[in-house]
Length: 189
Image 1: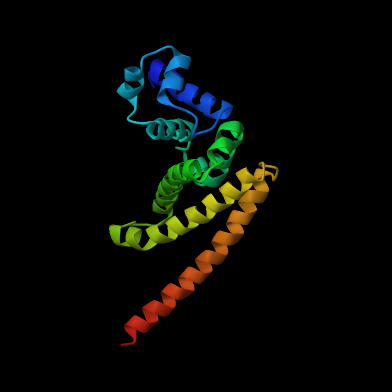
Image 2 (image 1 turned 60 degrees about the vertical axis):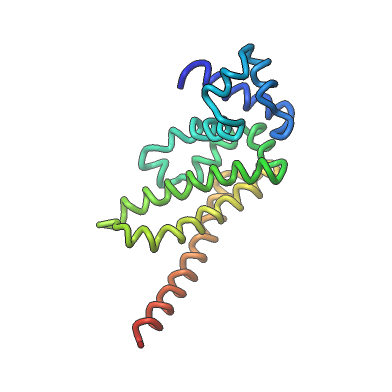
C-alpha cells in the first residue's frame, strides 16, 4: 500500500477512535494528515471505502491454511488488536451494518475457500448448495462477534469460539436434516 494511502487509512482509524464513525469527515482526515481532499478522493470514493481498505489490510494475513481453518479466531484477534476502533464501529446501527457486512464477506469467502480444500471436485453445483449454508454460518459468527464487542470483549476468544462451534454444529445438523427430508420428498414422486 502506498505511504499516503496507508497514512489516510490509519488516520481514519485514529479519528474514529477519538470521535465516532458519524463524526469523521474527509475534511477531518485530510486536515490531520495535512493534505487536500482531492488526495483522499484519489484513493477512495468514500469513507466507507477507506474503512473497507482498513479491514482488508487487517485481514490480509488470513491467507495461509491454518488461519483460514480458524477464520473466526483470526477476526476476533484483529478486533482485539484495534479494540477501540472496532468498538466504535459497533456503536451505531449504521457503522455496525458496514463493519458486519465487510466481515461477513470475508468470513464467507474464507469458509468457501476452506470448503474447497475438503470437497474433491468442489463444483459450481456444490458451491451453489454450500454457499447459503456458509452464509448462515458466517452470519451466526457475526452475531457472536457483535455481542462480544458490545459486551466489552471481556470473554476470552476461546469461549467465543466454543459458542460458535456449538451453534454452527447445531445449525448444520438441522440444515442437513431439512435437506435430506426435502431430497427424499422430491425423489419419492
